[in-house]
Image (tube, rainbow, N blue to C red):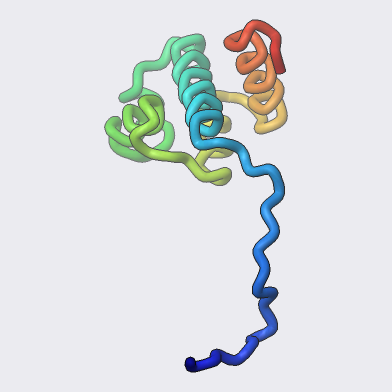
Length: 105
């Protein structure tokens, strides 16, 4: 049997209580729903927000429906376009998630 050299990586993988896929999906659904709610609360259409972001309207539609995931930088850009700081968005997400789950978080 051919033996491969150890390249400095542990042969044992340690798993640290990963979050289940269902929970990740629920959390991302909350994230998307909050983004949509914040846009609507500002009285903006998807097209108007897209113009502020200098992206196609479909970009906003896709991240609001969860078809496209936003990274941190994109999330920060959406916050700026909505007139929010990332800190206020994070607090709103925390409160929104708790409310959606009946305060169970």
